[in-house]
Image (cartoon, rainbow, N blue to C red; front, top):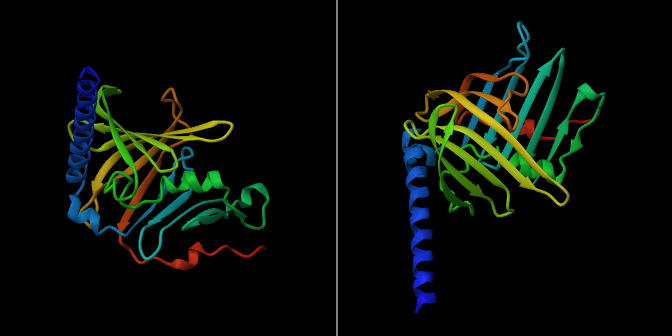
Amino acid sequence: MKHIFGLVLLLAFCLAQAQTADEIVNKHVAATGGADKWSKVQSVKYTGNYVMGPGMLPPVSSLLVAQPFQGYYSDFTWQGMTNKTALRADSGWSYNPFGGKREADPLSAQDIRETKLDADPQGLLFNYTQKGYTVEYLGTDDLEGTDVFKLRLTTGQGDMVYYFIDAQTYFVLKTVKRMKLKDKEVKSYTLYSDFKKTDFGVVLPHSTQSVNEDGNEQGGPVNFTKVEVNAPVDAKIFDKPKAN
């Protein structure tokens, strides 16, 4: 009887955790535009600059696509050369002329897994169960003086994304991505700020900053001057470029 009672308590605890996680996710979705708006998001295009230093603002862009196909594209231009990365479904390529390359290289399995964590224009939390993910509530935390809720999303491959969500605005202020590989663990940390409502009606951050585990900035921020939802998608940019 004690064993059964313990199982009942464990089940009740798990359900409470799930409900708490879902409540936070639902409030996050509502605060950033609502489920109806987010369900119609098929692509998001970001255009802006990477802040390398005073007067050094190389242009960057990225495109996240869910329809008519699943894909991700990003580029970075400096001194007349453009670095590009593209993913379409389960394969992709990268082109890095800064290293002297004259042809694109295929993305590795690790690169594909990492890129997929950034490729969903709706964000991984929206409709996470339909996407095959689980989300757990890990309690509250303090992020540089701001009270935040901490959630952990786990993908089918076991990759994890930790979300630090402002307890007042329900905006995501920080993510920690954690991937377990055969011989190592890869982590990345990103801060989000300058939240604005797009013309489409959803709220998205217009500035991101990579940091290390201790919170120290890694390079400069990326500031987006334009964020477009459901802009026309040029499928040609996902085609692997020919060797020069």
